[in-house]
Image 1 (cartoon, rainbow, N blue to C red):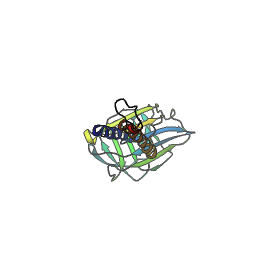
Image 2 (image 1 turned 120 degrees about the vertical axis):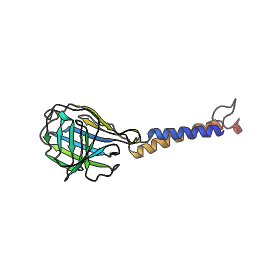
Image 3 (image 1 turned 180 degrees about the horizontal axis):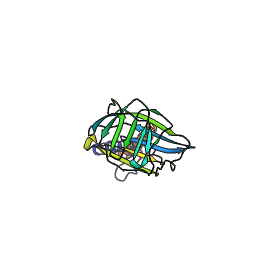
Image 4 (image 1 turned 90 degrees about the vertical axis):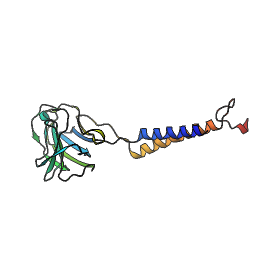
Length: 211
């Protein structure tokens, strides 16, 4: 009986772990929205294995030929090196955004740089956006696809992903995750109850007192 209880508890724990959201890395998107192109960035960064290369200041811009995307607005941002990833996500040259808002967030796959607001505290969630009016992904020279950039090793490993003309995967709402985990746990407890009320030669789930 103790073995059954231990097994049920172990399975329940494993099931709950399976439905917990993974630690999401930063996500950038750039997509066609009506007659405009909209880019967004959202997430947090681990800077442990990167090297600070000083503050800079430039407006939101996309440069597909050099794998560069900068969203958000502000007075300055810090550049960190070195990240690894695609050296281009298209053939387009520099195109500055018509407008931008939120936090500075940027990456440059060639030569491999990451940009965050000056004084950024690693692990802090930030987000920014930028809009290019009256244009298209094609006109900006962006090749649709999914592009991933990585840095760091071991527990300090981190990454960001650009979804260019692609939709990022949906993340389950916390309430959905809780309900799913509770449902799995209830099913396992029901199975355990049936096992406890059965014996050799006794149909599963029928209490011995009723035989």
